[in-house]
Structure formats: C-alpha cells, structure tokens
Image (cartoon, rainbow, N blue to C red; front, top):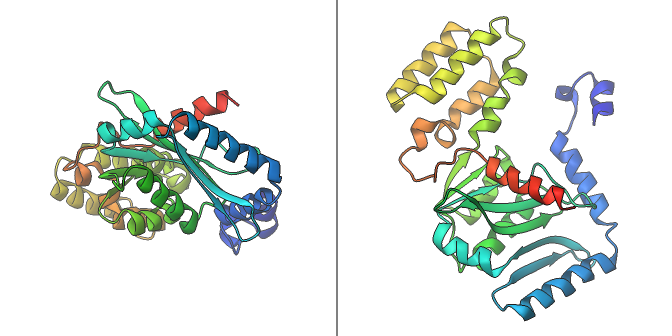
Length: 271
C-alpha cells in the first residue's frame, strides 16, 4: 500500500481505499486455505456441539466450497448474553488469523465491570455482505435478540450492516478512535494544539445539546475550519459519537471498543 501511495504522490490520489486493498488480499489469501483447515475446524465444532448441545457454530462457504466466514459461541457466552447483552462492542482491527481473516469478537461487560465474550467470528472481507452475515448469525445464536446498543469504529460497511440487520439497535461510534485521529486530520494547522484542546473540551464537557451546537459553531468559525471535510463528516454523524447525544441510553460505562481490543490482545497472546 505504501508503494502505491509513493507512486501516486499520496493516498488521496489513489483510485481505491486502503480497506479495498486489504479486502482484496484477504480474499486472495482465503482462497489458499487448504481443505483440511476448514474440515479440521468443522470437526472440532461438531465435537464441541456433541459435548454440549448449547454450543453454536455456523460456517459460510462460497460457490467453490471454500470457507468464507465462520461464527461460534459456547454455552457460557450464550448464557452471558441473556443477562449482559444490553451493550455489545464489536471490532475487527487488531488481529487476523494465518490466512489474513480478521478476528471479530462480540464483547460485553458483566455486573462486575469485567469484559465477557459473547461470540467470535472470522470473516473473509470487511464488507457489508460479510458483516451482515455475521450479525444475522449472531442474532440467530442469541435466540433472535438484537443488542439494544452496539459500539463499533467508523467502518461504513459495519454501519450499513447494522442498519440492515439491527435496525432498532442504537449504534455508537468509538470516541477513542475518533479523537485519536486529531493529529492526522488537524495536524497541518498552525494552531493545532489549540484546536485539539478546544475540540476535546467541546466534545467531552458539553452538558446539553444546545451547548454543544453553539460551541461547535463558534469553534469552527474561530479556527476557520469550514472546509475541513473530516470535521464536516463528524458533525453530520454527531448523534453517533458525541457523549451529550447518546447519554439518554444505558451504555454500561462504555464509549469505545477498547474492551474488544483487549479480547483481541488476549487471543493474540494465545497464538
């Protein structure tokens, strides 16, 4: 990817996005999965189900009989979801298997504030079709119950899939991922330090929607940020991530996908 950026003089001059490139590579690598790998996984899942009938799994195959997507959840995860499935975080960023398939854990939090696993998936592409299959399968696993609230990053494919599969769920974007991008999206401004500080105060300290709206307008005007497309996009989707717009719903103390990331790190250490 860096090679293409260098050749074209920057990512903005490329006719495709980085995630498009990753999806192509994931699909190509996935085509190399030998039959034995998929069959070994299916045999293991069958054994798990024979040991405990509440173990759930589903495998998605393409027209050539190659494994495309997979989801599984054990009895403990399914039972935990009945009690603690009010808020789910979902993230595919931090771990892939040997064939480049992103690991996709569903994570919640229990009454002790501890992270709990509510199911796992491996997907061949980070696109709307793959996420839709995974979300539908998760919902089937959890007795047809969609999560009242779900937290993800800003992935548009996830957003589209959630709107289709979980139309009544409240979808929140991870605020940590958004605020982490300040240096990238705003770092070229001479007044960056002041801009970053002011944006943080505005986002985290606004107590009412009116206070945020008035403050945002003043912030954009003071630093002449009217042409900044990143900020324009964030404002249009403000109801998905700014705390004052989402405080009316129970979020179990979560505003980011960092619990999912900790689960990813755990499984990464177990490789």
